[in-house]
Length: 121
Image (cartoon, rainbow, N blue to C red; front, top):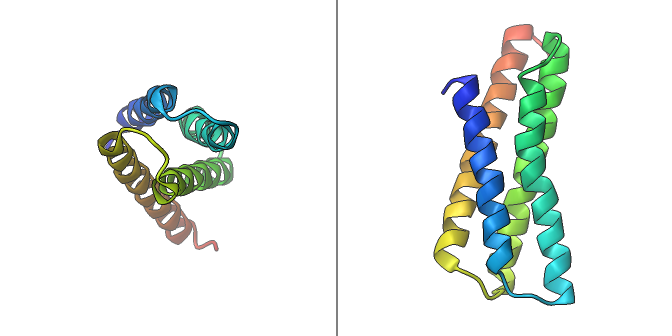
């Protein structure tokens, strides 16, 4: 997958999460969870754009770690919504969980590859 394809994929993920959240059950408690998920999912897309502009290997790696953490946090909040059985489109929720899990795998593998290439921890 190219950088541009991954930029598009992370943006589509953020937009899909936003649209999902527009339709989810509303309450004070759910609003808190929704806001956390909105922040982390949009951060995946925004920070991946920053990764693509990394100034050095170390800068690229550090920014990629942030993206990986935000993708994993998004996965957590999506799973949390599922575990709490919050009223929502469960098919869409399952698709978002799958996508978040795949993004975590992609970014984690990228970090591992860069570390091995640079002999760093």
